[in-house]
Image 1 (spheres, rainbow, N blue to C red):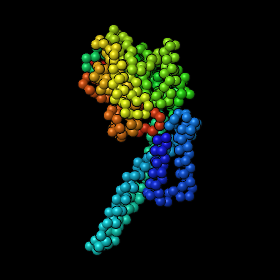
Image 2 (tube, helix red, strand yellow):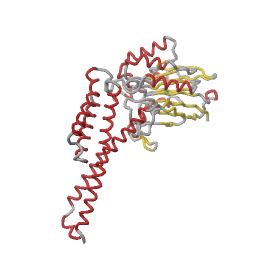
Image 3 (tube, one colour):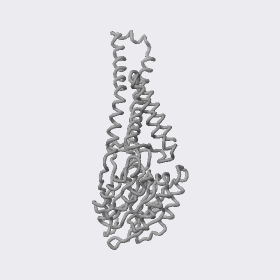
Image 4 (cartoon, helix red, strand yellow):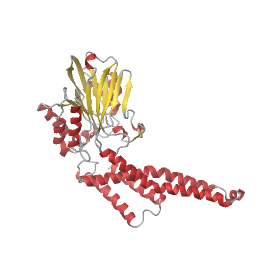
Length: 402
């Protein structure tokens, strides 16, 4: 409901800004088209709240969902680009109105002063009229980027004191796939195949696997195609908790019971040997099982105490956590490398800098705490297909001893 109300506010805001920046634009058929598109988009986003299906995500066939998402992205861009222009224009006009009329008599040519004002006003008017074009163009580019195939991102991780047996150990990571509205099971199949083709030793899935439980069987079938030597280890994200935790956990358990290569870790660990070296992978639950953040710190501490309890000094510890804020707790308990997702890298970045860097302490890429490292993936999928400068990724991490 909160997301629907926010989209309503963006539509109203875009309407008001366009009326202000380009008064003649929203008239006649264009006005009717705007209202119709806004209502249709809101209906598509709001229908799941009525039918209790994929809550918070648009429903309908693929074309309808794409239209709803594209319109929503465009009105958001109109607000983001148009609000600063409207504020600057209002400031300029207010400043001009406060200028004493008598000051114009000091000028050699009074028309020169008025010409400057008119010139500024014309410039701001032209900039204002460019806003909807810029918004539509940006949303189109971001939508096209979001709808494109993932990239395979190689990452070399140098860990001081890493045993020689693990020098060259390769991990394939997928995260935030969000099988459902815009991502289908074939996309997930391709992501698993990419890790298979990279011949990684271990595959991991760090949460937010699925949004549409109608595709759960196909999703598990795609994961089961893992051919890594040590299989695939997975953890839960917030969307598993929101969409149907019981069904998803049973699906993971069924795959494991049939001898499949996929194992779910919920505040637990799994150990294996690689070239004679014992490796223990710790997997922690998402710290907010509902939507409340008040219990986050307490639940992360509980997860740390439970999941690391079987670790021994002879183990090389790796940690999987959907939320990257678990990193300090993992580092304190000896995890050499923590892999996380959740942030999607903000989905928008300029010159490699996430536009929403302030939203998370650990937003995208690599972080260090002493000899311990964290890698936050930009995400393999998304629940809204809009990306600029942060492509979807299947990450192939290679461990190196230093």
